[in-house]
Image (cartoon, rainbow, N blue to C red):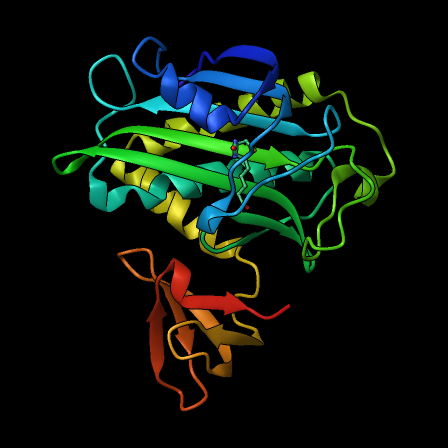
Length: 252
Ligand code: BTN
């Protein structure tokens, strides 16, 4: 698939995810809204996403499925969107000499530092995904971060270079187009799944986690991801336990 993204740059907006949602009925599949400054950026778990205006990339991509859009995608297969997006980011960073890993479900880490935040908001129609809003914040040129942020990093801190955010967005979208093409078929999705496992942060390594349901801190080893996209962790007693997104916290 040659993906034709249509990018709208805005000087300032509350949140590119919120803005693209407001305009979603009138925008086509593969529309992108990028902002120089976000005044109310939204993160995962209801957190805010605050960045230095103009320094980083903050943008959202509208994916529409079905007629005039991408091939239909079952609701049960929606994790394929995370897989395509995170793999595209990891590839794009490789092209920039940055060895990035995917922290399940959809953060991008370099060693123990977070380089990208992703907020994917899907809407379903029956058993299918109707629309997905993929919001991405890439730390490009920011070199200082508020102390309350846990372990942030940026492309500039990692490479010493400064980046032209417009050019970098185009470069990333070119890579993403290829992964969205792969996502369109069942065999492509299974390939994405294997590649995702190969890029996973902490896969097969023993580390500390908190079980958010009980508050218990334990040492475990990430073994993989279930059909339902749950994280599979080998526990101290050698059993495999599955965790949903808000049920486990990585201790860094
Ligand atoms: C996270 O908490 O890690 C996810 C952060 C996602 C931030 C991006 S920036 C562009 C888009 N617009 C938003 O309001 N959030 C996402």
